[in-house]
Length: 301
Length: 301
Image (cartoon, rainbow over all chains, first blue to last red; front, side):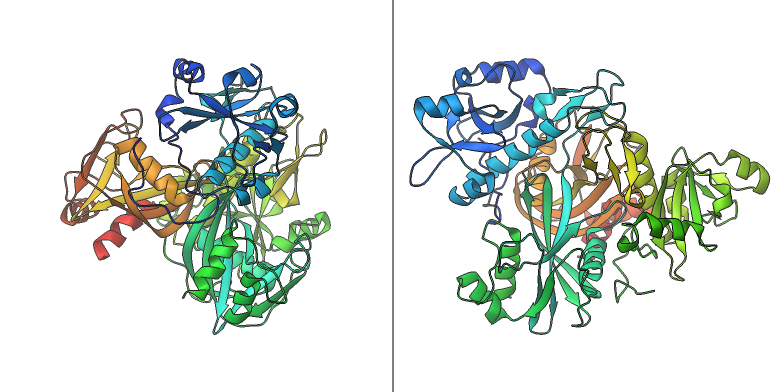
């Protein structure tokens, strides 16, 4: 298979999939029928959006043959693996398979943390697409029930003929910097003791740099003087594209929006290092999350 | 009013809005009622998504008072202007107003090219939001007709209680570079003679760097060795966030996907300069488009 990147992609969580999405094979139903009938075709099963994984010490994705997939299971084409073998994901119950052959259903986030880099990206692709189908069965224009087309990459309305595509919601996540300090905050829903970079959805009609400045001002009263892009990752809970930036802050004064954050504070590199090491008085997000990448990139700067 | 950015934002087309979106005022209907009743409140009228503009030599947005807006017109809160005055956009017919007071309806793209930097961003915000309401009147989960809430930044389903948010579809647009050359291409729908940077939607489960590499490979057979972010802009036709990048290409060989592009070719800086000057044998996109920013940034590099 052709590698699209001649060099490895940056090591950000949930990226680096080994699959070639093979977009040109999605267009014709006869290509899909051929790929599904290929004896090397395999399916990742997601049961209530939880992937079917092995019970090993180092769990891996269980790739099931066509005979394990009900004909009416919602399904998407993931792509071709490096050997050219078709890979799909399907939403269906795994109970009977687990009873017969073993295996376990894991929360996608937990599973992604256990998988090698690249394999976790397959879970991100599968979860976002299957969740989109599960929650977008009707036409937003006219309300009619829609049908999946293009190998699961669109839905078409038989009523008004509108075509609908999977959502990808861009989110900015940014570490505001000032002098020797970075700004971290916590939402009330975070695990106890965890702090992270501030974040928010990009709105219609703004650039990502403007979204960074708006969110820092809305959530913490911070004025931004400069924005610098670092890296991006998919975050399939349910369909975000996380866009990580550094922002230079004009001052230190924090004015919290308590609807968004329960606390925010300026921390030093030593405090961030201790949080990453698990020896500090607060916890940082795990390596899977791009906030972790922001922290490690700041420490290396 | 507080400026969110202490310095001017980068001069990319359709950015730099002077409005403060004042997110905290969207949450309570009583705040919205107060703002709509404020004597300084004004509305941008969009008729079939075309903004109502003056007929001057340098057309500007006509800001209409509440008395010009029917009670049942779909409406969104844009924010507060630098004087703290509320600004809204509404979808309604402008025919009676034009007959009585003059004015004209312009295509949004044409209008944006005539407005000063910053004013065009108001059109981007208005068009994306009003178009989203026009095409998302039903719940994607259950098909029931939905109602706008949160000052136009969400719709709620009275049937299943799902909440829906405006779409922002991230798109990568990239100039592949190799030695002294950049890769430009044309889609069959482009104006005659126009070439631009290649582009495509980011898919679920991939980073923007991966989308750049995938699109260059799909459309032109190019292998990417590195991706560098440049800038971003909203593109409200209907709801894109354009993310502009440079990509280093491994080789020059082009393999076209004729479903996506009708031609692609490698060009020099001199050829790009001539295209921007209007003296070459092909045309570049106008300054409003971020492809123009990619070209000028490459020339300056």
